[in-house]
Image 1 (cartoon, rainbow over the protein chains, first blue to last red):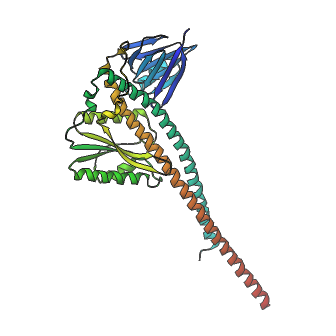
Image 2 (image 1 turned 45 degrees about the vertical axis):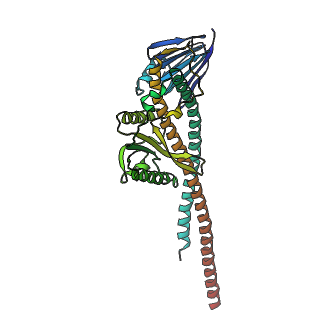
Length: 100
Length: 289
């Protein structure tokens, strides 16, 4: 499957960086997925689970933030991100984040 | 004259002090490294964030309308958030800053402004408790900087500002120059002002999709820049604290080793004196026989 670059950046450091096949993120207007050659986009994200598919599956709990998709480079800027074991775990972790 | 035993007691306690100060120095050195690493990580985020805000302002063309960017024409009440450490034993780190801020506050008061203080860190709170009105003391926040704490404080500040409770909000902290020197500095936090916006950045091309609309995105991004400033101040304060403690503990360890040298000499002299007296006594006793 075609791949693109993904990075998750928080003030506390780089949470993820690498080549991935797809990512599903909790947008403020509902979850959305990004595949290779996605149109340029800027979207707000809300606390929730983020799923990364790159060979295997990886999950992250993210807090509020914004994502920029441009030229097969997907950059998340989140207040906080931490690794989770499953989607449920990610959502549960995200629910403990303060909302704003 | 102190006995050999007295010297030995003093020496033992000096050696303990030396051990403690040496250890504290090493702990601070590693914490300092971590704090500087955190600063580097944070700067990556800042660059991206500011880039995004600038480009969004450029494509909207109306960025300066944002309420947080508005300067108040006549400033009457200001708030200064003082960042200090929770613990002492770091030389003049906290005291220098508090005195610097206190002088600044006096200047502002002479200019007819009302100045309130908010504190992050126990040392600053202790200092300003009797010298100014404390708006709020944030406890236990400077030890391990977290972005969520910065968000909480940032939201309070934005609320104060929006409610016109304060016309300007400043942050005061030590800027980390090196482990040997920290500079007390006061910067404006709110209103953000136009320096946030980099005019060089070009607008987004027309093909971009925005979710939600750009105005709403900007509405959520600008406060993040304020949160980030607070978070970065935390990091700067923490780097400065550990640097100052490292230096203070280094000189304390050096002083302890000087004292140990002195006392060892004195103890040896006392021992020698005792031996000499004993010998004289024995010789005198033998002669008497």
